[in-house]
Length: 108
View 1 (tube, one colour):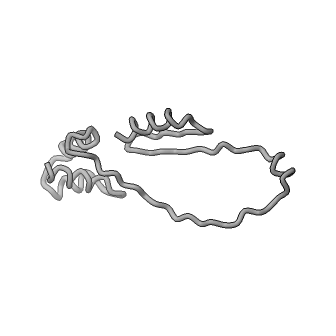
View 2 (cartoon, helix red, strand yellow):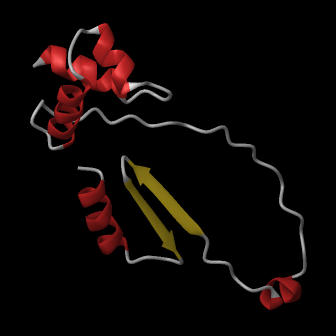
């Protein structure tokens, strides 16, 4: 089982080729795709959670009068979560419990 996990996790790295990794381990690529499905379903143990951190630059926001701030429209923003073949796009301000439930289902 550990071998399968190592092979699958190698295919999940950015720029990795399933066919090339399968060939390196002398196994069929279709088998690796099957292992990847099992991995996502948790059949090869718990799925490793990888986070990609992005650099953040903080800058001082320009100051304006309170009257100007009231006239500016508020932008609710948005969020895009990509996980495998699933892309979740959320715009506005979602209900926290609903968002938690949706993310749990997408990331399992």
